[in-house]
Length: 341
Image 1: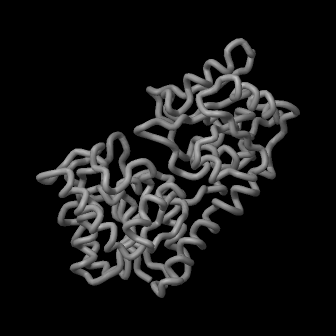
Image 2 (image 1 turned 180 degrees about the horizontal axis):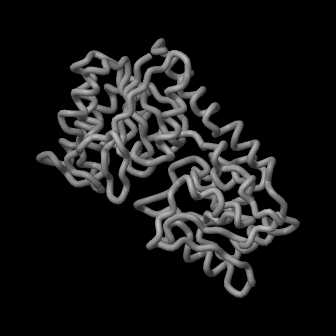
Image 3 (image 1 turned 90 degrees about the vertical axis):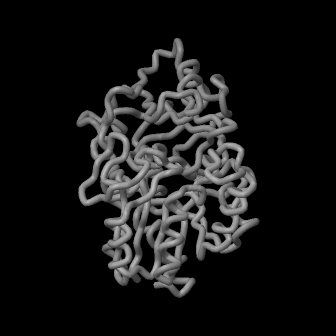
């Protein structure tokens, strides 16, 4: 099976490593199509795009389109939302080539009949909504990143499959990075955007006066993906107490930061956001605090820090459910069921 995977996110190592793994699977020939630059990220062998950095407006130029056409894919797999111009562009390419098209979506807030939160590129928001609905209905397979996303898609397309965008590189995120004396320097690590919706403010309230040592990210210093494991392993518990808002809520089941931390052997305290519970229910060493509740968060952190030791059961759970082998097997299985592989 010849698959062209198309996304702006392929410029990031998390995506690139995973698709390199998929390309090693029997019966799969893969072509990755991604921007050469995106904000402050760069990756070799990428392609120029129009609208760099604009998730909804960017498109690939003629060099990338020629590469796809020369590759002659059986399937174009777009990992951008239906409402993105690049998805519409790849739908047109698939139509010209006569190949299948699958699209991965995270959208779990705005129904496809609601265009009020997006800039209207057409003459009216209603016209735009109708176009997106028609596109969504014509896609051969919609891979939904979470249950809420699938519920929004199914009124327009019943041909869905639920799975992660990419797997967790458990061979990189390992407990071996723990300090030699076995005792991490920090009690808690917060790794992500230090913003209210990510729970930074409520975490500051929860830890105030406790004496817990917390590692906070430096917004002016980007840590490369491959350098993250020692940061995780220098703490006992990851705090990821995200908060649902009208404009954003967690999309990846469990959240990649939580899954990477668990893979490194940490315990995790997260929130009861739907995607977090969906992804981490029954995982050893995980606590769900009430959203935006400092007292609930403090109680969970207290329990997680008690009698602490590396959470190897949690690591094994993540490896079996969200590791490369598991996620790849499920995705290729979905393609195989449809006779594409």
